[in-house]
Length: 261
Image (cartoon, rainbow, N blue to C red; front, side, top):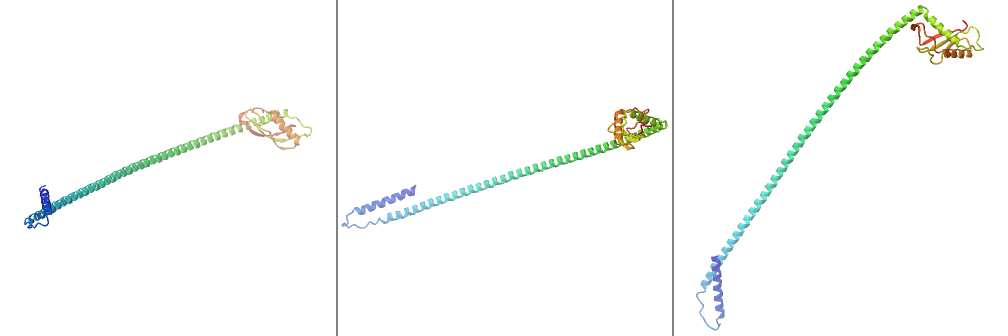
């Protein structure tokens, strides 16, 4: 503050000197003061101080601006570093998230592959077991079929043997004669029938002797009325007589119907 006070003191002296000079009459002759140089020298000295103060203030302002610029630059650098740090952190988090997602997806794919493989093995095992069961059932069915065929063959052989024995004993002829006589009793002779009728008749019966369907008259020396009368006689004779031996029973048999013999 001292240089400022000196400046103001110098200015005040200059103002006083000027006022004195202006206030004096112009007709008076006065010698020029020899002390004027001193105030001028003071003014020069004060101006230099002002310049120095101004330069000092400018330097201080410049230093302040530089300091402000440094602080701004430091803040910008800090902000940039923080931005880069945040960006790196975001990249790190994103990378970790992608890594977790990839690991989870791989694990899910692995589990799906394992489940598919287990399902495939299970289906193969079921198919194999089913095939084995089917093959076993086929073998069992084939075994049963062979056994049944053998049993039927044995039964057929036994039946044929028994039938042969029965025929040898005359039981088949006796059975056929019983059936023919039974049909004769139910036959009504048509007017067109001539003596010596012989007609071959095929009959289907049940084990009970009941006639099944309409008898089939084949070779016959009678007319249509005779054929119809024989068919009606067979149906009327149902049920047919039981055989003297089951060995001579036949579900389908053929006899010669000769009512005049």
